[in-house]
Image (tube, rainbow, N blue to C red):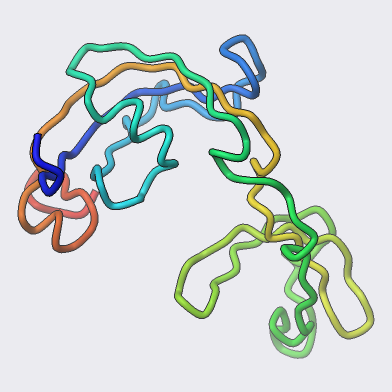
Length: 167
């Protein structure tokens, strides 16, 4: 397989904390399977490397250490933001509450979950560490489909579902 060929891989998976017997974090059970394009860095690299060469019907079960998944928690990811970013009609929006997780967009248009740590006099303290930072992960599942990506999918950087619509 040449390095330039991109595939669309469709998987059903269960994600557990630490081991296959650990607490379930998320699952595709009863939902749409996960579809992703290989070679574009859309997935945790270790996850993609473990499933990209499997065939339809193959099952998988593997762990990924936190440093190879969502990394370590860092103090730099606890940030102070001006309260006016969260104001509407002169007051804080009701979603701004300690413990709530809000989507914050960075200067590159990427959305990051931010957990509100504290509401201060003029600022909001938010933790933008990934919720699964410091967490070892274990994936189990099976391969539903593997196909070559279309030229449009590679150019657009995402999978198109049936009928050519974004999936």
